[in-house]
Length: 288
Image 1 (cartoon, helix red, strand yellow):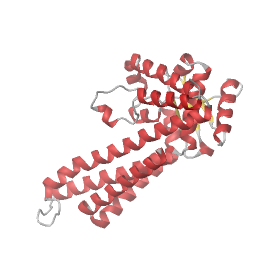
Image 2 (cartoon, one colour; image 1 turned 120 degrees about the vertical axis):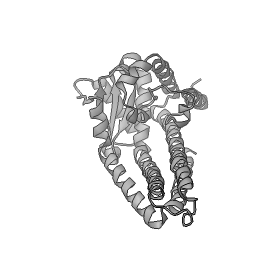
Image 3 (cartoon, helix red, strand yellow; image 1 turned 90 degrees about the vertical axis):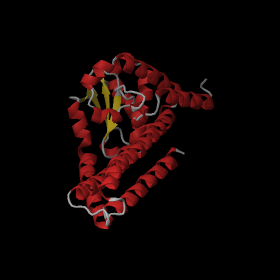
Image 4 (tube, helix red, strand yellow; image 1 turned 60 degrees about the vertical axis):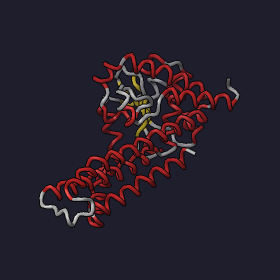
């Protein structure tokens, strides 16, 4: 179901790109914007893992340092049918975890010092299963595709706005010259962002469901999410210092707290809803 929803949302995003491109930039503008967006996100796809790990000063943990953690990751990866990802530690107090890497063969699972301090082994197992699910489901590739199309839409709108601002002709412009371009300059990227956020939230739900299957205990992840959400609320000021907003979408629980309006643009679904769905899965499996 989540896969179908993701495909539909990517289709909507692609359709939005084609419509906006045709209106604003014509075929040439569409190609230019798409190529630029693809180049930027190609770089992000290949190097985002190194950038994210470096940003948090994360280092790879050897087997001798934490054999129990490596064994846990190895077992979960075996359950998921993927190679064992490398294991990194980010020395920050915010309890969280994230996965990165362009494919299962080059994947990394990173945990923070904070998460090791507050979760039980079973709860940590649920979190790691969620991150391994992201790797198994190739969510980094999906988010890169969505970012490429969304970036191209934003570029097209910007190109049209500046073109009309400096010499555009209202009579020749099908969207009403400068005013029409200004509206699309504002609205098109917002629409693209909303679809991208919907894709991201759908992938989080999918990773929860897949992770529950991988660790074979939905309640482990549900209880971990309860703790992580509560801690995120308590440590919001610390998160503002330690967490880069550009990487918050990678983490299992968004550590940055926002207003009700900001939640519309959140990359994560409400934690309460995620927990509710996991409890439903637990009842389905006969665990409660």
